[in-house]
Each structure stands twice: as structure tokens, then as C-alpha cells.
View 1: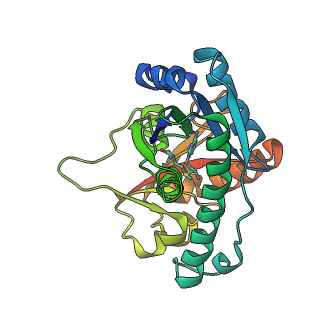
View 2: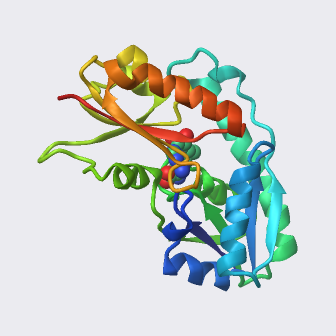
Length: 252
Ligand SMILES: C[S@@+](CC[C@H](N)C(=O)[O-])C[C@H]1O[C@@H](n2cnc3c(N)ncnc32)[C@H](O)[C@@H]1O
């Protein structure tokens, strides 16, 4: 008999992002599994608070996240074979760790819950890992959508994501060099790559720790606020020990 994997988007940090559907799913789970990264103290804490508030009777199982080999990423501008192999090995290790925890805490026919930051469809590996787990344990995924950090960013700045009739592109800092930057959302950028790619007049809407009490927002032409964003980012990262930020670049 298979188990159900409830893949629950919990929003990007604001407890108000948690939907009624997510709360129902948290309560329906036999256990909620959190892959616990070594430096994710605050992020794990926020997820734990969400569970305490909405599904206090559902047990939480912390699964230590296996280490990831990042050697092939250094200096690489785009994913190559070695990068993909390292990520694949990491997902396999995560799948093995989760499979063990699942068998221990969820009965056959039961529900395993996975709390996913933002929405599971956007730069998140939970669905891929669950696919790998299901190679050893029958597991049927059910996704409960959440508010992404992209939506949290546009809401915080009270702007539209796209301009009238125009496309929008979502990419990573690593791939920003390949983008025309006309209307681009950039995630996972530890290097403020916009400083290398953007035109001086491009407008940047930047947000860090969106939806949390530490939220920081800055916006303006890159020539005016670019250095300020880089400085603010470095100082905030130093102060909190971690940072998550996202930005939209828009060419006038
Ligand atoms: C691994 S991705 C996960 C994205 C997530 N699934 C979502 O729907 O937003 C992590 C990236 O999302 C962005 N991010 C997530 N939460 C954020 C927040 N609260 N504030 C700013 N950026 C955030 C950052 O660009 C971060 O590097």
C-alpha cells in the first residue's frame, strides 16, 4: 500500500502566507518532515513556529540534510555535467535519509507532510527527491501551492510582475549573464550579479527576508542604489548569519 506525500507550500516567511489548504494538509499528516540544513536555524525555527501555531498535534521529524559537494559549482557560469552529477548524488542521499525516516514515522496508507519554503514549483528539489524516494517506497505526491518569494517581492513593493503584454523571465544569479535583463526576476544570487549586467538606468526592486520582521526593501535605478544594495546585503548577512534576497530588474 502506498503512502501520500503532502508537499506543502508554506509561503516565503510571513505566517500570513500559510493558506487554509496548507493548514488542513499539516493537520492531516501523520508526521511532518523537515530537512534540517546545518546553518538553517532561523528557517527551521520559522517552519517549526508555523507547525506549532497551526498543527500542534502533528509530530515534526527533523532529518539532517546530507552534505552537498559544491566543488563543481565554483567558477561555473552554468550547470554542467559535474554540477548535475553532484546535485543528483545529493538528491539521492536526501532521498535515502527521508525514506528511512518515512518508514519509521508514517504507516502504510498514511500521509507524510513536507513543508516547502514558498511554493514547491519554484527552485525547490522536494518533488524531485520524493520522486527518488518513490523508487524504493511507493509514494504518491499531492502538492498544496504556496506564495512564492516572487509574489512576496512584488507585493512588498506594490508593483506588477509584468508590464502590459510583456513577458517576464525568472532566472538565477548564475545565469543572469545570459539574460537581456529587460524584465527579469533574479533568485539565488549571492554575488549581486546585477552590478555586472544591468544598465545604469535599469530599475531594481530588491527585497531581503521578505515577510519576516527583518524584511528590507530597496528600489531605484541601479546607478543610484546598486552599491547601497550590495552594502546592505553584506551587512545584513553578517548580522543575521544568513540571507535570502530576490530582485526584479526592469529596463525603462
Ligand atoms: C531555493 S530557492 C526557493 C524558492 C521558493 N521555493 C519560493 O517559492 O520562493 C531560495 C531563493 O528564494 C528566494 N527567497 C525565498 N524566500 C525569500 C524571502 N523570504 N525573501 C527574499 N528572498 C527569498 C531567494 O532568492 C532565495 O535565494
